[in-house]
Length: 95
Image (cartoon, rainbow, N blue to C red):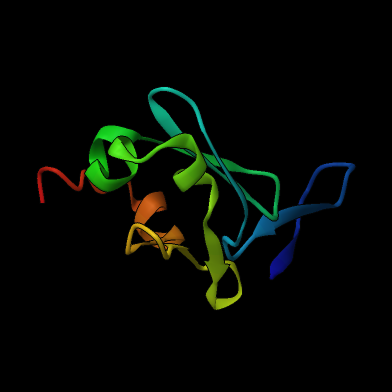
């Protein structure tokens, strides 16, 4: 969902996202990158998620997007993450 906001500039309206929904998850050696439907990308350190950090690339690739894009699930690893939690930037190791 998004909202159009009136602006005093010549452009008139701005696109303001009001929800964050996942569409794709990718990994590199240090980070998990969650691509959102509105074009944003959330990147978080793998060290926050020991199960994902220790998983093979093939295991990481076997994820499901649930709750209409609000949740991420790795059935084989029994790992569940929320997009809202990732956006909040919670350091899972410190929690």
